[in-house]
Amino acid sequence: MRSLKQKTYYPFVLGCAMNYADAERVKSVLETLGYVEGQQEEKADLILVMSCSVRQKAMDRIYGKGKIWNQWKKERPLFTVLSGCVLPEDRPKMKSIFDVIFQIKEVDKLGEMISKRVNEYEDIIPGSAYFKIPPKYSSSFQAFLPIQAGCNKFCTYCAVPYTRGPEAYHPASQIMEEVEDLARRGFKEITLLGQTVNSYKNTEEPDAHIQTFADLLRFVAEAAPRTWIRFISPYPTDFTEELVEVIATHDNICKTIHMPVQSGNNEVLRRMARKYTREQYLEKVRMIRAALPDTSLTTDCIVGFCGETEEQFQDSLALFDEVKFDMAFTAQYSPRPGTTSGRFFKDDVPREVKKDREERLTKVLAKHSAAFNARLVGKNLPVLIEKEKVGFYHGRTEHNKPVRVPAISDGEQRVGAFADVRITSSTTWNLTGELMQ
Ligand code: SF4
Image 1 (cartoon, rainbow, N blue to C red):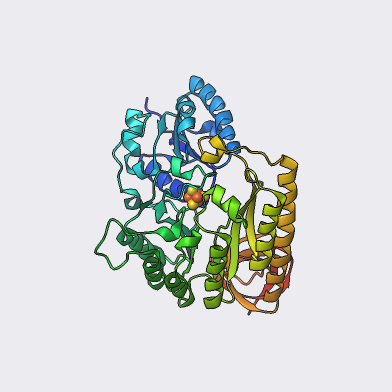
Image 2: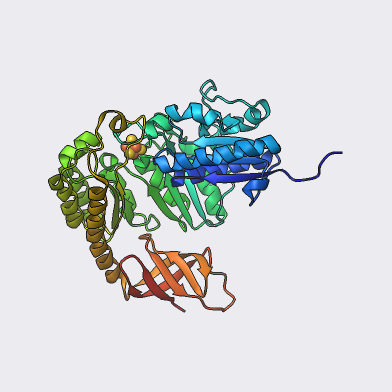
C-alpha cells in the first residue's frame, strides 16, 4: 500500500548570506518535487546542506554529521544533497556522505540529479536558470537577492575563487523582474548580494541600459522606492564616484557602507593579494565621506595573518582610529587548505598573539561604535521592526544598528513594518528607543 506520509527535507545552512539566499531557491525546487520543510533532522527523507569552506570548523561539522547520516541510511531511506562552497580537495570525502553534489547554478537540474542520483557536478553544462526559480523567502518582508557569484580576485587566504569559481553575473533584466515583484508584494528591505558585489557587469545583456553596478543600484532603488536597499560586500577598488553619487541621491539606499579592508598595512595587504594600498583605501573613504558625511562605515579585518608583525598590526589599529569604523567583523587568521596562504605561507603568529590583537582591535572599534551610537540619541529614526520578544520590538535603523523598543498593545501589526522611533539611549553596540505616536 502506498504511504500517505509527506516527504520532508531538513535544511542545514552554514556560512554567509549568499548561502542562505541560495538555500531559498533550493528549497523552492525541493517543494516542487513534493517535499515540505521539516523540523526534525532525524525524521527527514532528505537532508540539504549548504556548506561553507571559509572555516575548517564548518567542514568538520559536516564530516561529523555525515557519519551519523551514513548510519541512518543503513536503517531507513535517506537522501543527502550538498551545495554551497566545497573546496576541490574536500570533494572526494564529501562523495562518501552525499548522494548528490551540485553547483548552485545547476539548481534547475536538481530534480533530474536526484532521480538519477548524479553524484558529480563537474560534467554538467553550466546553466543560467537560477533566477527562473522563485525562491522560498524565509521572511515576508526582507529579501536577499544574489546578483553575482564567484570571484576573480584570488586573495591568498580565501577559498571562494576555488569553491564558487570565476565571477558570474545574473542578467539585469531578471534581477529587475524579481525586484519589481518584491516591491509589489510590499517587501521592506532588499539586500543585493555578491562576493564583490560592486564588480557587477551585465555581461549577458550588452545592449541593455543597465551595465554597471551603479546603473543596477539606481534602477533597483527607483523600482522599489518604499523599500530599503542594501548591498554586500563591495570591493574597495570597485567603489566608483558614480556609485557614491547614486547612493547619495536615493533616500531609500541605506546610508551604511561595508567596505572590507582586511589589514591597515601595505606589506600585509600585498601578501594577502588585496589589490589596493592603505593610501588607496583611505582615498575611497574620503570620497565616500565627502558625499555621504553621515554614513555608517563598517569593515572586515583579519589579525595575525602569516608574518604579521606587531608594527604591521599597529597599522590596522591606527587605520581603525583614523576611519572610525563603527562596526567590523574581525577574525583571527586561520589557514584553509587549497588556498595560496594555506599551501605556501607559514601560519607563524601564535594563537595567543592573534587573540590579543583581536581584543585590542575590538577595543578601538568599541570606542567608535559607542560614539556613533551616542550621536543618534535624541534623534527620530525610521526603524524596520524585525521581531517581538518578551515585551520588546527588535529592529534596525538604516545604519543597520540594532534597536530595542518597548512593545505596545494597540492592535497594530508592527513586525515587518517601518516604525518612527525616538532614540532614547545607547550602549557600545545597541540603541534603545520609544515609538513615536
Ligand atoms: S575578494 Fe578576496 S576575500 Fe573576497 S571573495 Fe574574492 S578572493 Fe575571497
